[in-house]
Image (cartoon, helix red, strand yellow):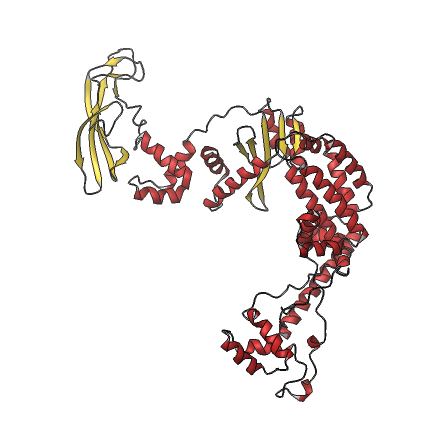
Length: 549
């Protein structure tokens, strides 16, 4: 029995059932003596006995309660201030503990994996009950692992509360493990952490000015590497900002190829008059806000001040401030309809001269159409060549939809269009290639897209751990000079920001390091944070994250 249920430093006396779901193990210490914790003198004189009842790991699905026969000894050293002392079991349980060390360790590991409340619910079914508060206190008491001192680190920000509170995550890029979570993303906090790690020789980061300044202050001798994925992201954002300004102008460009004839719907069904008026009123309000932003910007106000006084989002203020005209949104195309599989039959019957909605609905019903005649009547009302016999004479006017040619395809939004413009022509499908060809008719668009694609090719040529291609930094310098003299304000500002961070960008093009590990660890951190419903304090979240890694 002692081999089946090992008790370090103890002898198992007997096992008793304590109801249908619990066991009681009676045990006592093996040696017949004990050592005084103060003077370390050995004593064999027993003063008295008492029992401790700590909880232990379950056995066969049953909760286990220990009954330890504890002896109290006399201290034989006359100079010792302690007259009596109780024997201890350091390998089995801590002083004054109500559970064994192995039970506390199992509960702590479960709490680290699941969190407080979920672990408490699970442990109740595993015969190791504990409250959520006790589990959190146990997790906070687990010592953090001692990691080797890093030399190559990556740094990135993460959101404790998105849009409000942000922190910093530090990752050891050589060992692929997180090192620390910092309470904010300021340069001072990051510099203070670096000063405690003087052996660091390389820092991979995004293009944040705070991290750049913090690295310069805390580790001036370390090499800073700009992450290549963030360089591509910044390029797309630059294209998107430029598109937001010129999008109204690009909408006027004619398509290169005429749209192929199709029997499918090219627009949604007409909206109700009340909905149309509400939409027009909303557009009018946004136009007033656009005029207000433009007027404030012309008066010399900064974007931050406009954002504070108008209450608009910072991205909206920037978009309105630099747009050539009010950025109207194109109407979305029609969604899927249960009438779509039968449109070919409807067009064929209408071409044959049938414009009776009830007759068309009966034919569709025989073909398996599950809808009502109202849907067929609404489709037919836009395509009639002559009024119906039941139509009031004042409304007997031909539908304009019967004579108007299908409209040209709308231009995608700036965000979606920026993805198309930066892709290589061979990677575009037919529809995307037609959209890109339509946009490139504009001379400024051709210049901006050419520079954007050229920079992306330079960045993508440095992929993986293979050695950098010769002349890659020379190609970047040539692109930098061309972009700063292109005459497009958005591209010139982007080039100036890259020139200011030129050493880190060139290092990113030459060296294999990147902050991709940070992005993966941030993803794990998000999962952990959301499993705690976003309510964990930083110390608990940091401890769970580092211990789980």
